[in-house]
Amino acid sequence: MRIQIAVFNHLLKQQPAVRAELAGHAGRRVGIVLAPLTVRGVITEQGWLAACEGEPEATIRLQHAAALAAVSGRDPALSDVSLEGDAELAAAIGRLIARLRWDAGEDLSRVMGDVAANRLQRVARASLGFKGEIAWRLLENWVEHLREEAPLLASRQAVGGFVAAVDGLRDDVARSEKRLARLEAALAQTKE
Image 1 (spheres, rainbow, N blue to C red):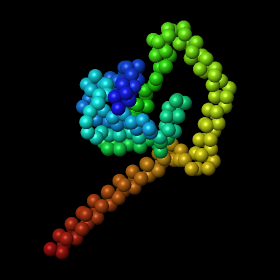
Image 2 (cartoon, one colour):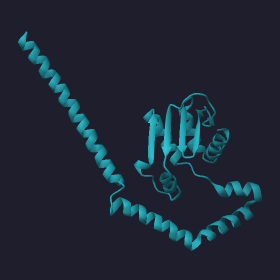
Image 3 (cartoon, helix red, strand yellow):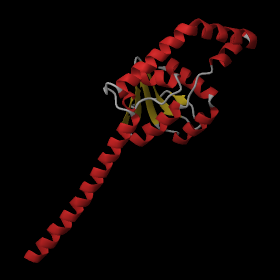
Image 4 (cartoon, rainbow, N blue to C red):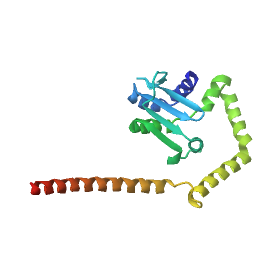
């Protein structure tokens, strides 16, 4: 577990603005799961994650599709992220995690120098080259097909509309229950 925390803190070191916002949740226990990796800890006052005992107050579970979406610079689908425990804390931590990015070039430059790191990055990109670009576009097209053509996956707009409709229905039911309670109370008074 300590290695996962160290890696997470390394990402935070590269993103001081995210770490500063994370410090606002100091003392809270959180968990992040991207199977098979799990990171659990308590947020320190400086915005780092430290090992701790006990269950997390909030857990963010990510599907692998969420990681692929983040790598491609897109927002993950709602179905690819699940929040457990304190929903408000989990949502806040999830928004911060979405902003984390690994700067591989910076890490490579520490080990082998700026020039060698830059060359290695160019070689890595070139090795993916045309085949990598084709694979990426096929994956994007397949996901779009699942969302649009064969609606096995819901689009963000459809899920947002559904959530808004459910919220509206819940509010309507709550108002109806209050009216019914007032009517029952008035009826009880007239019978007495």
